[in-house]
Image (cartoon, rainbow, N blue to C red; front, side, top):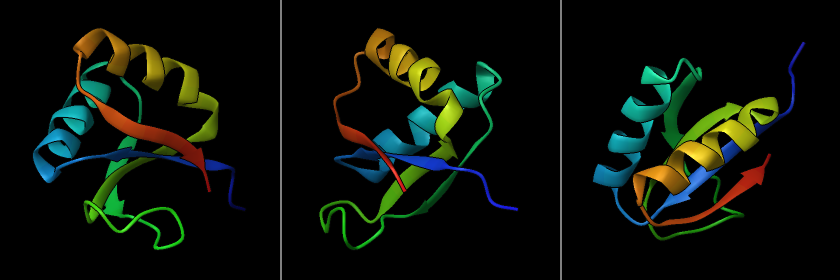
Length: 74
C-alpha cells in the first residue's frame, strides 16, 4: 500500500543533497528522486518523503536558510 508522498523542489542538485542530509539527521526518512515532469523542469532532482512529514521538513528547511521552490504532495 502506498501512502501519500510529498516532494521538495530545489534550485540545484547540491541543495537537494544538503536537504536530504539535513532531513536524515532529523530522522525524517527521505530519498532523492527525479522531479516529476508535471511539477518542474528546472533541477532534475528533488527530495521525496511522507506527506505526514511535510510540516517538519518545511520547518527544518526554513531554519537552514536554503531556498526552495516548494513542497508538493504527489
